[in-house]
Image (cartoon, rainbow, N blue to C red; front, side, top):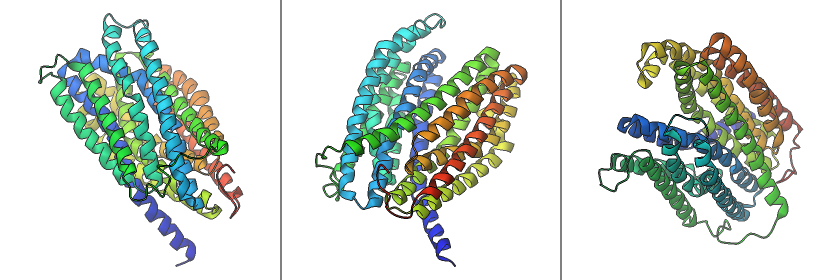
Length: 453
């Protein structure tokens, strides 16, 4: 057994130990939204429409804001790799301040602009008015949610992901209980439907943030990590932390915006096509939580190796992460392929809809692997100090290729055309980003790396 093989096995073990609770935490995020949809949908179809319309604008902002918080994870991992553990508290403190700033701005923007936009989009009568109060309540949960994201990223970089995982699933339990009580207004509070579900989301997200912050403050090593110390002003470190966030946030915004455009294209095809595309996206989003978790775990290991000046370790951690996500997404694709009809039937049993969604869902399994590779390689690049090239490559793949190709193919072969566009874009993105990571890792010296290099 060679030394490299032993190192690779050690990296694989570290990756899997870190990744599984991170994946479970990401699945918990999806579960919280799915719970709201199921409970509200069973209560009232019109209330579900209000909820869906209110979630649409918040989803873009939430996803972008989560990317902006990525600097907490990357910078914490790099400082640990450098042996500067006493300074990681400063990263968290800056992250919490950023999350509050972004959260407050997002809240004000959604409250001031969101209802006006909903009521001037040409929606059917009453939909904009019904969704507006739901949007306002969801907007109020933004600061708490972003603080919880910053805290989760910090704990993951500290190799304490299980705390975030358990907190997320406790929050899911709170969300479920409150939904069952408030949506049908069992308690007689005069609050029901989509607005009630929005308040349960607010409470669950805020509780999650409070728990995670209290947990971090009570860690035995909190004082040694500098959690309670006001960090010295370090403009270079502040710039690097923001830069990582800007890069990740821009990428997330590009991807979410591109897929929103694809949904609009589906809307041009008809109601059945729109519903079929929505189901394909929902299933794909659930599957995507696996590579999302793997990307975070890979970023932590790459960031630590980068901070330690270990160029070989950067390459090894990135390639191990890519190998594992390839295996996992391949397994999911192989399982989903023959069970696509059963999965689609869980959403709706309309024969006309199933005739469109089942072949599209089978086809979608072809981009699972490429999609997993591209998100892991993007995170590995940023953790290795390469911030903006992943964003440029995402723009090329999803904005310049996926959207126009999707429009052309959708009007020729329907929903399958949209899926083919995603397959093509994911393949382009995965090849570009993986090649970029290998190039970046090869250029890293074996020592002397540090934050900002």
